[in-house]
Image 1 (cartoon, one colour):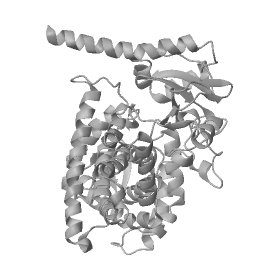
Image 2 (cartoon, one colour; image 1 turned 90 degrees about the horizontal axis):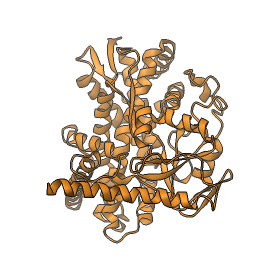
Image 3 (cartoon, helix red, strand yellow; image 1 turned 90 degrees about the vertical axis):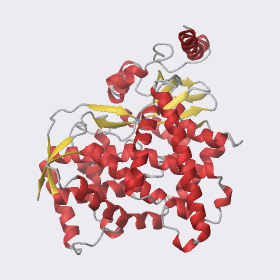
Image 4 (cartoon, helix red, strand yellow; image 1 turned 30 degrees about the vertical axis):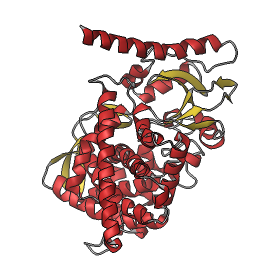
Length: 472
């Protein structure tokens, strides 16, 4: 009985804490014109509807019902404005940086709490992470040297996880490879040790967009526990690598962690900050990149003429190389049609729901006021299937990306502006390398005609996208 009472009181406290902001904002609505929309139910808001209907349908319905410029909702316990269209994308991601700050859902913010607990401000944490990503991940030389490693590990992956089988579930297979590559390139770990992270990453990712109710058995509670396990594991790896680097710098690998520890400015980062930078690189790639790979291969299996053109491009590259010669930067630059196919797949099935900001002050956009403290969501779903930007938007047409491509700020799968995803090129290389190796080996036949697409941050096929493999 006592345990039940504590559980009930906890729920009541959470209910009240989420209800009060809604009531306060309703009472302030006469002072300014708030975004049209609804906050849904107290506590859960419209979160359940968002995931049950899918983010694309949810957003399109509300754009039609309330406004195609900005509308209000409540997701994961937060008052939220969704800014829409090319003008909204440009405003939020490029010109409103003085009025908004990055914001993370509750489980993701647990990562930055690692170093906030040391007395660092959350703004300092975000600035350091972004600077680290730009310096380490976006440097051209670093990206070029990853390509042969990606190719080598992808070949090994196909030999062990594809070649022996007549049917492969593409989504879990692509998740496995993206995790192996992330652990190798970021941490310098071999595939066997990399698999230890698989469950933790998956559970943490599920909690990223859950209601922040930290009670036993909830998705959020399970994710919080896995985040703590990741923290301890990453700190252990950092200490091991520090010791190795101190003992023999020449044996340090070319992975991101080793390069970070060899950098003369490493003293500016604590071990917790290094861990935060690394894990914030790895978890997004685990979900979003594997999702993109999955839906690219899905479309190739459905569209033989697109597959044939990709195959032709890849075979031209293969003919110019020795059989065992690995891909390099020059090869990647030749995969122009393949990249257009990837872009079209990401337009139809974006690899992420979007990204969040928090209003630092009242924001005025399209005659609407977004109050200070509200969260603001940017989502590719507001533009990607808008016929104004993409004629016949349901058709798969890679030629949309030829020449100058789509209208600016209408197709931005990696966001844009100062906060553009720093892993964009990393993801591009990985998807192209995977695509190159699969297409040259197999023809693909989808086994479930209308497999449902679900979401947990990134979209994924409900049954893993089983494919029948037909070797060339």
